[in-house]
Amino acid sequence: MNDAQWYTFFTLAAEVLGPGNRLAEHSHSWCSWTTFDRLSVDAGYWTGGLPALEDIFETSIGDNGVWGQPFHFSQLAHLIVPRKFMCDEPPGPNWTFRERVQNLEGLSTKLRTAEIPHRLTELVLDLQCY
Image (cartoon, rainbow, N blue to C red; front, top):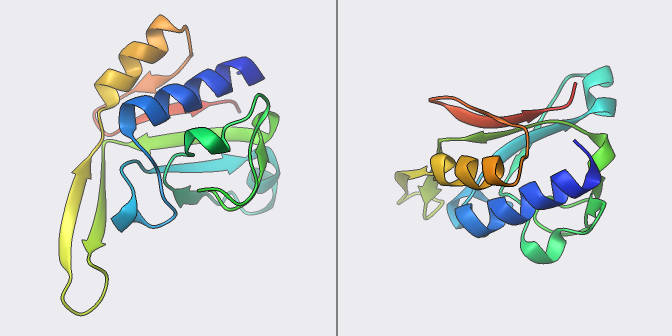
């Protein structure tokens, strides 16, 4: 994936799946991602809503947005968008567990049209760069 492909992916994801948020209960989209550096240290993943349009730049995700810190597209090794994600609404003692379903087919269709390499399964849509 090059910078232009990542930029296209993130803008299409924001358009199709809706605005992300750091907290699942306030988010219309959700994903997990990791970087090449993180894979070499602990193979961990971050989770959060997909970046908002104002957080998406030509070569990176901006600082202090939905993802909380900047990520250059060239750092991204793997990104997973689950078909469903769960959240508590509202958070606290009177919570209701809610399932949100993401339109992965709609996103995949737009990604295929834009020639963005990805994989779609029953559970996830993912982009692997490792």
